[in-house]
Image (cartoon, rainbow, N blue to C red; front, side, top):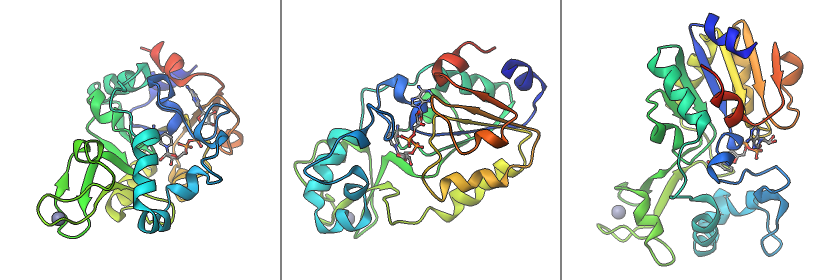
Length: 235
Ligand code: NAD
Ligand code: ZN
């Protein structure tokens, strides 16, 4: 069924979340074994990964961020690899991802909209100099700019921060011109990302997720299972 939708589609867009990367060993937020099931000295991950916490307690922010949010050893899984194949065949118009792990780009995809940013992009808050992930991982405590001494901030969207305007426009444009939208590995509980789906007016809305999602009732096909397993079996 999914195979025949893909065979018939010419402009597929993939909209994904943390569940796309769990098979690569990166925990999601809301599954039973996800990060939200734990508490960190009375704080939730949502509190720690917020704009206000970053500015008030940068040291604690970076300790949590390095330990739980960055997985330099993670490799693309069968889902990422299949999407690269689809892009090479010119069927996949773009990937809109909420993930910050950079694994779609690592798999080779070029048309990737990282709407929540990427751990691989970091900037000095004072002079705006760019830094790779190493600058965050190798620093002791708060990472500092080697040019001006300013704090280096990961260019990931924290709770309380807005999305990049150009990335948002590009992502919504791709979704609005897709004939098939595959939504996978996301609880669709983070806004405004989840409402990007409203721009879709193509033929096939496919949802692949381990748990029910708010998009299921609108979908032409709902598949309850592991996204890496399901995509990895397709041609
Ligand atoms: P979420 O944790 O809220 O939801 C993940 C969903 O994926 C759940 O419904 C779960 O049942 C499902 N799922 C988990 N593993 C799956 C699998 N193998 N196959 C199919 N479904 C699977 O994640 P979200 O909706 O992406 O929202 C969380 C936010 O946290 C995002 O904005 C993202 O930026 C961030 N985040 C990113 C990463 C990452 O970069 N890999 C990891 C954790 C959180
Ligand atoms: Zn600087």
